[in-house]
Amino acid sequence: MVDTQHGPLAGFTVGVTAARRAEELGALLQRRGGAVVHGPALRIVSLANDSELLSATKELIDEPPHIVIATTAIGFRGWVEAADGWGLGEALLARLGATELLARGPKAKGAIRAAGLTEEWSPSSDSMAEVLDRLLEQGVEGRRIAVQLHGEPLPGFVEALRAGGAQVVGVPVYRWLPPEDLGPLDRLLDLTVARGLDALTFTSAPAAASLFSRAEERGLLTELLGALDRDVLAACVGPVTALPLQARGIKTVAPERFRLGPLVQLLCCELPARARALPIAGRRVEIRGHAVLVDGELRPVPPAGMSLLRTLAARPGWVVSRADLLRALPGSGTDEHAVETAMTRLRTALGAPKLIQTVVKRGYRLALDPGSDAKYGDG
Picture 1: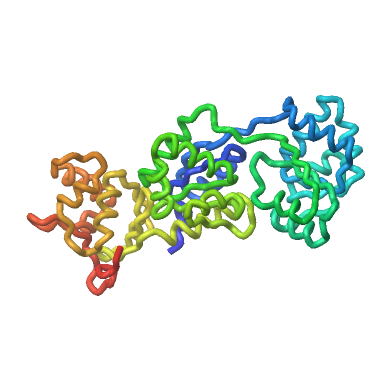
Picture 2: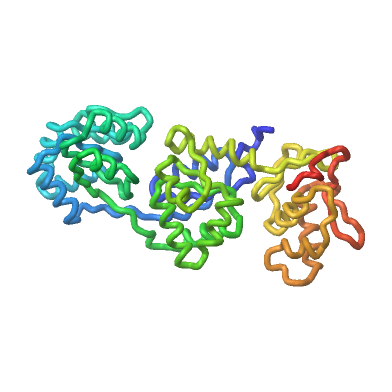
């Protein structure tokens, strides 16, 4: 069932690790009904005053490259602006105008043209893999290739060019560093470990690496990997972004087109497909991250109630003891009265008390419709 009334992401919570374009991604998710938690895993630091960038710029002006690859718009613009600041702007643009310019995608292409230059070629996929395939097919033996780095390693890209006989000059325009304020990132990490998120989005490989690094510092790496492995969907904007996650054995999903819009559309398909839908007391009940759809009506449920509901839904139709339900409640202690209190609130939140039956002296069960085979599923 498509939730057209509330949006396909209604009832789901999505984490955003991006530093750049986080507001845009968050707005796209919220427009489709999702709740968003932002914890930037990185910050971008310009290298306008960096000796490495100055050195690479002078080297390319003095020793012309055969090919220059612009990988990001912000990086290419930053490079030209930094060169202007050093009095090398005209010399750099003259040099770039006399070489073969490749743009990784439309945004890099736009930055090249804004500088008064024209690109030789740009891939339709916005993929560095396609750029690499083209270069290797043409042959790079003895060619001098400048690559505008975009704050992260390009896995295998530079190595493949060098293996093909090219001389590669890296142009480091900006770097990724950990955020100055770690609070939002820590909150995102805590929510992931506690399964308070349904999906975690990544738009750059360094963001994933930074999240793992912070988890390790806090002694939460094992718990983080467990959450991403089983319960929290890792959604990446593209295959390069997914590499640090896949290297740790995490399964990821990515859209065919490496853009924010397709990433959000992918989540609109993946998350509802992962939700548990059951026929209970004559109603269709779909259990989402922080809410439940009861016959298409969105019913927000408190965290304690969701814990109880998920425990009951793991064995739909079977009686679950108060002791087992108590163990499912976060920080509930040993008083089984906490189960009764949370259950009352859950029933109120669902707006349909008959969905959950009390079995005297035994516990509670979902009132699964007769004839449903869900009772015999593994949940």
